[in-house]
Length: 350
Image (tube, rainbow, N blue to C red; front, side, top):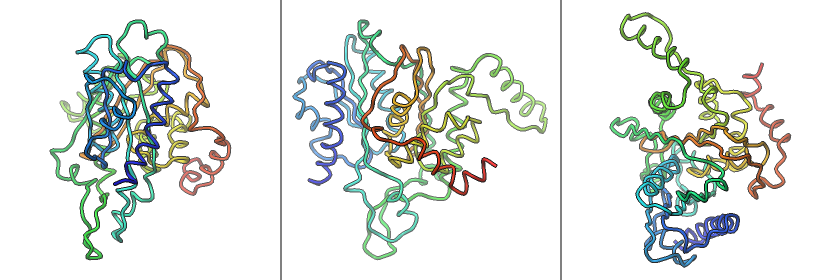
Protein backbone atom coordinates (compact mmCIF):
# COMPACT_ATOMS: atom_id res chain seq x y z
CA UNK A 1 0.00 0.00 0.00
CA UNK A 2 2.78 2.45 0.90
CA UNK A 3 4.56 1.80 -2.42
CA UNK A 4 1.33 2.29 -4.37
CA UNK A 5 0.70 5.59 -2.62
CA UNK A 6 4.28 6.65 -3.35
CA UNK A 7 3.79 5.84 -7.04
CA UNK A 8 0.66 8.01 -7.24
CA UNK A 9 2.34 10.87 -5.37
CA UNK A 10 5.46 10.74 -7.54
CA UNK A 11 3.52 10.79 -10.80
CA UNK A 12 0.54 13.02 -10.06
CA UNK A 13 1.89 15.57 -7.57
CA UNK A 14 4.68 16.57 -9.96
CA UNK A 15 2.26 16.59 -12.90
CA UNK A 16 -0.23 18.83 -11.09
CA UNK A 17 2.52 21.17 -9.89
CA UNK A 18 3.81 21.57 -13.46
CA UNK A 19 0.29 22.34 -14.69
CA UNK A 20 -0.36 24.94 -12.00
CA UNK A 21 3.01 26.58 -12.66
CA UNK A 22 2.34 26.83 -16.40
CA UNK A 23 -1.17 28.25 -16.01
CA UNK A 24 -0.55 30.48 -12.99
CA UNK A 25 -3.60 29.04 -11.23
CA UNK A 26 -3.40 28.63 -7.46
CA UNK A 27 -4.64 25.43 -5.76
CA UNK A 28 -7.31 27.36 -3.85
CA UNK A 29 -8.70 28.70 -7.16
CA UNK A 30 -9.79 25.19 -8.20
CA UNK A 31 -13.47 24.52 -7.49
CA UNK A 32 -13.89 21.06 -9.07
CA UNK A 33 -11.57 18.05 -8.87
CA UNK A 34 -12.09 14.80 -10.81
CA UNK A 35 -9.62 11.91 -10.56
CA UNK A 36 -9.88 8.61 -12.42
CA UNK A 37 -7.80 5.59 -11.43
CA UNK A 38 -9.24 2.18 -12.14
CA UNK A 39 -7.42 -0.27 -9.87
CA UNK A 40 -6.00 1.71 -6.93
CA UNK A 41 -8.62 3.21 -4.61
CA UNK A 42 -7.27 3.74 -1.08
CA UNK A 43 -8.90 5.36 1.94
CA UNK A 44 -8.63 8.35 2.22
CA UNK A 45 -9.30 8.70 -1.49
CA UNK A 46 -6.93 9.91 -4.18
CA UNK A 47 -8.87 13.17 -4.26
CA UNK A 48 -8.22 13.58 -0.54
CA UNK A 49 -4.49 12.98 -1.11
CA UNK A 50 -4.36 15.75 -3.74
CA UNK A 51 -6.47 18.15 -1.69
CA UNK A 52 -4.27 17.57 1.37
CA UNK A 53 -0.99 17.96 -0.50
CA UNK A 54 -1.96 21.17 -2.31
CA UNK A 55 -4.08 22.54 0.56
CA UNK A 56 -7.13 23.15 -1.61
CA UNK A 57 -10.21 24.91 -0.33
CA UNK A 58 -12.78 23.20 1.88
CA UNK A 59 -15.78 23.63 -0.45
CA UNK A 60 -14.12 21.98 -3.46
CA UNK A 61 -16.38 19.55 -5.35
CA UNK A 62 -14.43 16.31 -5.77
CA UNK A 63 -15.13 13.02 -7.55
CA UNK A 64 -13.04 9.86 -7.50
CA UNK A 65 -13.80 7.54 -10.47
CA UNK A 66 -12.72 3.92 -10.02
CA UNK A 67 -13.00 0.71 -12.03
CA UNK A 68 -13.67 2.61 -15.28
CA UNK A 69 -10.71 1.19 -17.20
CA UNK A 70 -8.61 2.74 -19.94
CA UNK A 71 -11.42 4.87 -21.37
CA UNK A 72 -12.01 6.74 -18.11
CA UNK A 73 -10.36 10.03 -19.11
CA UNK A 74 -13.13 11.10 -21.54
CA UNK A 75 -15.61 10.12 -18.80
CA UNK A 76 -13.79 12.35 -16.31
CA UNK A 77 -13.70 15.17 -18.87
CA UNK A 78 -17.43 14.74 -19.50
CA UNK A 79 -18.16 14.84 -15.75
CA UNK A 80 -16.07 18.00 -15.37
CA UNK A 81 -17.95 19.53 -18.33
CA UNK A 82 -21.30 18.82 -16.68
CA UNK A 83 -20.12 20.31 -13.39
CA UNK A 84 -18.89 23.45 -15.16
CA UNK A 85 -22.32 23.82 -16.72
CA UNK A 86 -23.83 23.86 -13.22
CA UNK A 87 -21.25 26.01 -11.44
CA UNK A 88 -20.23 29.28 -13.16
CA UNK A 89 -16.84 30.97 -12.98
CA UNK A 90 -14.93 27.84 -11.92
CA UNK A 91 -11.75 25.88 -12.65
CA UNK A 92 -12.00 22.09 -12.96
CA UNK A 93 -8.89 19.96 -12.48
CA UNK A 94 -9.01 16.50 -14.10
CA UNK A 95 -6.37 13.87 -13.30
CA UNK A 96 -6.03 10.60 -15.20
CA UNK A 97 -3.79 7.90 -13.77
CA UNK A 98 -3.32 4.16 -13.37
CA UNK A 99 -1.37 2.42 -10.64
CA UNK A 100 0.94 -0.47 -11.45
CA UNK A 101 2.51 -1.26 -8.06
CA UNK A 102 -0.45 -3.12 -6.52
CA UNK A 103 -1.68 -4.61 -9.75
CA UNK A 104 1.29 -6.58 -11.09
CA UNK A 105 0.24 -10.16 -11.78
CA UNK A 106 2.59 -12.78 -10.28
CA UNK A 107 0.77 -15.90 -11.50
CA UNK A 108 1.23 -18.13 -14.56
CA UNK A 109 -2.05 -17.80 -16.48
CA UNK A 110 -1.23 -16.53 -19.99
CA UNK A 111 -4.41 -14.46 -20.47
CA UNK A 112 -3.55 -12.57 -17.28
CA UNK A 113 0.15 -12.09 -18.01
CA UNK A 114 -0.44 -9.88 -21.06
CA UNK A 115 -1.24 -6.72 -19.00
CA UNK A 116 2.21 -7.07 -17.39
CA UNK A 117 3.74 -6.66 -20.85
CA UNK A 118 1.52 -3.75 -21.94
CA UNK A 119 0.86 -1.48 -18.98
CA UNK A 120 3.27 1.16 -17.72
CA UNK A 121 3.23 4.00 -15.20
CA UNK A 122 1.73 7.24 -16.50
CA UNK A 123 -0.44 10.20 -15.59
CA UNK A 124 -1.88 13.41 -16.98
CA UNK A 125 -3.42 16.58 -15.54
CA UNK A 126 -5.85 18.84 -17.40
CA UNK A 127 -7.33 22.18 -16.35
CA UNK A 128 -10.77 23.20 -17.65
CA UNK A 129 -12.40 26.58 -17.17
CA UNK A 130 -15.76 28.23 -17.87
CA UNK A 131 -14.44 31.74 -17.13
CA UNK A 132 -14.84 34.02 -20.12
CA UNK A 133 -11.52 35.73 -19.54
CA UNK A 134 -9.71 32.39 -19.89
CA UNK A 135 -10.99 31.75 -23.43
CA UNK A 136 -8.15 33.39 -25.35
CA UNK A 137 -5.38 31.84 -23.27
CA UNK A 138 -6.91 28.36 -23.42
CA UNK A 139 -5.57 25.83 -25.91
CA UNK A 140 -8.76 23.95 -26.76
CA UNK A 141 -12.52 24.13 -26.56
CA UNK A 142 -14.46 20.95 -25.77
CA UNK A 143 -17.15 20.53 -28.42
CA UNK A 144 -18.48 16.97 -28.05
CA UNK A 145 -18.29 13.92 -25.78
CA UNK A 146 -19.83 10.57 -26.72
CA UNK A 147 -19.98 7.59 -24.34
CA UNK A 148 -20.78 4.01 -25.38
CA UNK A 149 -21.26 1.20 -22.83
CA UNK A 150 -21.81 -2.44 -23.88
CA UNK A 151 -22.07 -3.81 -20.34
CA UNK A 152 -25.41 -5.46 -21.12
CA UNK A 153 -23.53 -8.01 -23.26
CA UNK A 154 -21.91 -10.85 -21.31
CA UNK A 155 -19.04 -11.11 -23.81
CA UNK A 156 -18.35 -7.37 -23.57
CA UNK A 157 -18.68 -7.36 -19.80
CA UNK A 158 -16.19 -10.19 -19.33
CA UNK A 159 -13.56 -9.46 -22.00
CA UNK A 160 -11.46 -7.43 -19.51
CA UNK A 161 -12.03 -8.84 -16.04
CA UNK A 162 -10.20 -8.57 -12.73
CA UNK A 163 -10.29 -11.92 -10.98
CA UNK A 164 -8.24 -14.62 -9.26
CA UNK A 165 -6.31 -17.20 -11.25
CA UNK A 166 -6.36 -20.81 -10.13
CA UNK A 167 -3.60 -22.28 -12.31
CA UNK A 168 -1.02 -22.31 -9.54
CA UNK A 169 -3.42 -22.85 -6.63
CA UNK A 170 -2.44 -19.50 -5.04
CA UNK A 171 -5.53 -17.52 -6.12
CA UNK A 172 -3.39 -14.70 -7.53
CA UNK A 173 -5.32 -11.55 -8.45
CA UNK A 174 -4.89 -10.12 -11.94
CA UNK A 175 -6.71 -8.81 -15.01
CA UNK A 176 -7.79 -11.34 -17.64
CA UNK A 177 -8.02 -10.38 -21.33
CA UNK A 178 -10.18 -12.71 -23.46
CA UNK A 179 -10.02 -13.51 -27.18
CA UNK A 180 -13.31 -11.66 -27.73
CA UNK A 181 -11.67 -8.33 -26.88
CA UNK A 182 -10.95 -7.18 -30.44
CA UNK A 183 -14.42 -8.08 -31.72
CA UNK A 184 -16.05 -6.30 -28.78
CA UNK A 185 -13.86 -3.23 -29.30
CA UNK A 186 -14.86 -3.14 -32.96
CA UNK A 187 -18.55 -3.26 -32.09
CA UNK A 188 -18.17 -0.53 -29.46
CA UNK A 189 -16.29 1.67 -31.94
CA UNK A 190 -19.01 1.13 -34.55
CA UNK A 191 -21.77 2.25 -32.18
CA UNK A 192 -19.74 5.21 -30.92
CA UNK A 193 -18.89 6.61 -34.36
CA UNK A 194 -22.49 6.10 -35.49
CA UNK A 195 -23.54 8.44 -32.68
CA UNK A 196 -20.66 10.84 -33.23
CA UNK A 197 -20.92 10.99 -37.02
CA UNK A 198 -23.95 13.32 -37.34
CA UNK A 199 -22.29 15.76 -34.93
CA UNK A 200 -19.03 16.16 -36.85
CA UNK A 201 -19.26 14.83 -40.42
CA UNK A 202 -20.04 17.11 -43.38
CA UNK A 203 -23.52 16.76 -44.92
CA UNK A 204 -22.13 15.00 -48.01
CA UNK A 205 -20.74 12.12 -45.93
CA UNK A 206 -23.93 11.88 -43.91
CA UNK A 207 -26.03 11.60 -47.09
CA UNK A 208 -23.86 8.82 -48.52
CA UNK A 209 -24.03 6.93 -45.23
CA UNK A 210 -27.83 7.38 -45.03
CA UNK A 211 -28.40 6.20 -48.61
CA UNK A 212 -26.17 3.16 -48.04
CA UNK A 213 -28.12 2.34 -44.87
CA UNK A 214 -31.49 2.59 -46.66
CA UNK A 215 -30.28 0.36 -49.51
CA UNK A 216 -29.09 -2.34 -47.10
CA UNK A 217 -31.88 -2.25 -44.51
CA UNK A 218 -34.97 -1.31 -46.54
CA UNK A 219 -34.29 -2.57 -50.07
CA UNK A 220 -32.06 -5.48 -48.92
CA UNK A 221 -29.34 -4.62 -51.43
CA UNK A 222 -26.24 -6.75 -50.84
CA UNK A 223 -23.55 -4.14 -50.50
CA UNK A 224 -20.90 -3.33 -47.94
CA UNK A 225 -21.71 -0.94 -45.13
CA UNK A 226 -20.31 2.50 -45.90
CA UNK A 227 -17.70 3.75 -43.44
CA UNK A 228 -17.67 7.56 -43.42
CA UNK A 229 -14.39 9.34 -44.08
CA UNK A 230 -13.56 10.77 -40.65
CA UNK A 231 -10.51 12.47 -42.11
CA UNK A 232 -13.00 15.08 -43.35
CA UNK A 233 -14.17 15.68 -39.78
CA UNK A 234 -10.88 15.66 -37.84
CA UNK A 235 -7.37 16.99 -38.35
CA UNK A 236 -5.78 15.02 -35.48
CA UNK A 237 -6.66 11.70 -33.85
CA UNK A 238 -5.54 10.55 -30.39
CA UNK A 239 -6.11 6.79 -30.08
CA UNK A 240 -5.78 4.91 -26.82
CA UNK A 241 -2.49 2.97 -26.89
CA UNK A 242 -4.08 -0.38 -26.09
CA UNK A 243 -1.54 -2.30 -28.18
CA UNK A 244 -0.29 -2.65 -31.76
CA UNK A 245 -3.26 -4.76 -32.81
CA UNK A 246 -5.74 -2.21 -31.47
CA UNK A 247 -4.01 0.72 -33.21
CA UNK A 248 -3.66 -1.19 -36.50
CA UNK A 249 -7.34 -2.21 -36.48
CA UNK A 250 -8.59 1.32 -35.82
CA UNK A 251 -6.31 2.67 -38.54
CA UNK A 252 -7.74 0.10 -40.95
CA UNK A 253 -11.41 0.48 -40.01
CA UNK A 254 -11.42 4.28 -40.06
CA UNK A 255 -9.06 4.49 -43.07
CA UNK A 256 -6.71 6.86 -41.29
CA UNK A 257 -3.40 7.93 -42.77
CA UNK A 258 -0.10 6.77 -41.26
CA UNK A 259 0.75 10.36 -40.30
CA UNK A 260 -2.49 10.62 -38.29
CA UNK A 261 -1.67 7.43 -36.40
CA UNK A 262 2.06 8.13 -35.86
CA UNK A 263 1.59 10.06 -32.57
CA UNK A 264 -0.31 7.09 -31.12
CA UNK A 265 2.39 4.67 -32.27
CA UNK A 266 5.04 6.93 -30.72
CA UNK A 267 3.25 6.98 -27.35
CA UNK A 268 2.89 3.19 -27.44
CA UNK A 269 6.52 2.81 -28.53
CA UNK A 270 7.96 4.95 -25.74
CA UNK A 271 5.50 4.50 -22.87
CA UNK A 272 3.47 1.37 -23.58
CA UNK A 273 -0.14 1.36 -22.42
CA UNK A 274 -0.47 4.15 -19.84
CA UNK A 275 -4.19 3.41 -19.54
CA UNK A 276 -6.58 6.38 -19.48
CA UNK A 277 -3.78 8.96 -19.66
CA UNK A 278 -2.45 7.59 -22.98
CA UNK A 279 -4.59 9.89 -25.16
CA UNK A 280 -2.94 12.88 -23.46
CA UNK A 281 0.55 11.51 -24.19
CA UNK A 282 -0.53 11.34 -27.83
CA UNK A 283 -1.76 14.94 -27.78
CA UNK A 284 1.44 16.12 -26.10
CA UNK A 285 3.46 14.43 -28.88
CA UNK A 286 1.49 16.46 -31.44
CA UNK A 287 2.15 19.69 -29.56
CA UNK A 288 5.84 18.88 -29.07
CA UNK A 289 6.86 17.62 -32.53
CA UNK A 290 4.12 18.88 -34.82
CA UNK A 291 2.00 21.98 -34.62
CA UNK A 292 -1.59 22.40 -33.56
CA UNK A 293 -3.10 25.13 -35.70
CA UNK A 294 -6.00 27.33 -34.75
CA UNK A 295 -9.26 25.64 -35.76
CA UNK A 296 -7.82 22.10 -35.82
CA UNK A 297 -10.34 19.47 -34.75
CA UNK A 298 -8.94 16.80 -32.45
CA UNK A 299 -10.58 13.46 -31.74
CA UNK A 300 -9.66 11.53 -28.59
CA UNK A 301 -10.72 7.90 -28.64
CA UNK A 302 -10.50 5.56 -25.64
CA UNK A 303 -11.43 1.92 -24.98
CA UNK A 304 -11.85 0.28 -21.59
CA UNK A 305 -13.32 -2.49 -19.48
CA UNK A 306 -17.06 -2.81 -19.17
CA UNK A 307 -16.85 -2.65 -22.23
CA UNK A 308 -16.72 1.06 -23.05
CA UNK A 309 -15.74 3.25 -25.98
CA UNK A 310 -15.62 6.95 -25.11
CA UNK A 311 -14.63 9.91 -27.23
CA UNK A 312 -13.97 13.60 -26.75
CA UNK A 313 -13.75 16.17 -29.54
CA UNK A 314 -11.77 19.39 -29.11
CA UNK A 315 -11.31 22.47 -31.28
CA UNK A 316 -8.00 24.33 -31.12
CA UNK A 317 -8.54 27.95 -30.08
CA UNK A 318 -5.02 29.06 -30.94
CA UNK A 319 -1.79 27.85 -32.48
CA UNK A 320 0.09 25.57 -30.08
CA UNK A 321 3.71 24.44 -30.26
CA UNK A 322 4.62 23.38 -26.72
CA UNK A 323 7.60 21.73 -25.10
CA UNK A 324 6.74 18.62 -23.05
CA UNK A 325 9.05 16.85 -20.65
CA UNK A 326 7.52 13.53 -21.67
CA UNK A 327 9.12 13.83 -25.12
CA UNK A 328 12.52 15.27 -24.27
CA UNK A 329 15.40 13.50 -26.07
CA UNK A 330 12.99 11.30 -28.04
CA UNK A 331 14.39 10.26 -31.42
CA UNK A 332 11.48 10.22 -33.88
CA UNK A 333 13.55 8.86 -36.78
CA UNK A 334 14.80 5.95 -34.68
CA UNK A 335 11.21 5.11 -33.77
CA UNK A 336 10.11 5.25 -37.41
CA UNK A 337 12.98 2.98 -38.45
CA UNK A 338 12.25 0.48 -35.71
CA UNK A 339 8.50 0.35 -36.44
CA UNK A 340 9.06 0.05 -40.20
CA UNK A 341 11.33 -2.94 -39.58
CA UNK A 342 8.67 -4.88 -37.65
CA UNK A 343 7.44 -7.86 -39.76
CA UNK A 344 3.72 -7.05 -39.68
CA UNK A 345 4.22 -3.35 -40.38
CA UNK A 346 6.69 -3.97 -43.22
CA UNK A 347 4.31 -6.45 -44.85
CA UNK A 348 1.44 -3.93 -44.64
CA UNK A 349 3.47 -1.24 -46.40
CA UNK A 350 4.46 -3.45 -49.33
